[in-house]
Image (cartoon, rainbow, N blue to C red):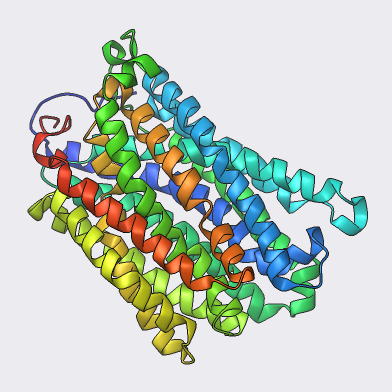
Length: 434
């Protein structure tokens, strides 16, 4: 494998290689998140198959609980794959990760229902989600690290933003598949067997991504991988300040991200009273616009700095979350819903476009994948993964608006953390890399 760690000025050939590496890493990232989000978007249809209850909110609450449980495996995945990536290379870790996601999706695709095997059905569903959570917990840190290291100096914000282009693209593809199924199958067919189709597609796509990742260049050196602190918690502890900073702004960033992406489809149906097909169409269009925003906001961070981008995120998210969610609660027009969701996602883009990069810039190469993956996974598991469950639980308790203020408070904390931090794009570990 060719190395991408030389310090020479990037030639046209080198630039092409780096772009190919971004594309290769992105393809696997897209498949990983497609497989992970298919669960959330199809929950409206398979919830009765695993949780037989007459109350739709209770069914969604149960599936959201399993969704959150998958997030609890992320810290373990962040640690395991971070260690693997720092000691044995980013490419190896990314290949193992996408292979595991393939297995989890295949299991869900063929899983018997509650009517067929009783309580074992939701138990196996939970097990498959835990397996997927382990995989995606490792995917974020390794792909964020890889794409940050392979990006060109001076344009890292632009290139690294493609991690969320493909992450959002995974959500978008999951929604598009669901929309196609909604147009071709009846609601009864979707509940009976149609929900399985996206999981089969995801498993097959993961095999293609695995093949593409085999050709990726490695971004670490043997010297870095063989350092005694490489991939160790002891080595990471030397950078505990960076770790705590990432925890601080990831908590709010993950929470608001999942609020306005995966949970929003259910919110439009369960709270605003919108038809499921209409809500899917609204979110498909909104996510497409959101995906296109990422390179623009990433390029903006190259000009104004990562810290300033995070400050904009913290400020606008703090003042905008409650008004936007209140407006969406009473929305009747799908066009108005689309506009409100896009406005919210524009705010979130200040964070998501540089999410992986700003973390990678804070850690040295020997613990970079571990530092990025574990810090992100811990905050994401606690705050991002629980977003749907907390929102639905508060709705069931008759205090849905409390959730709006919860999101606001966490985004305010992210803003304070950004205010106190130094700008890693000017002072971080990647500043001298090619």
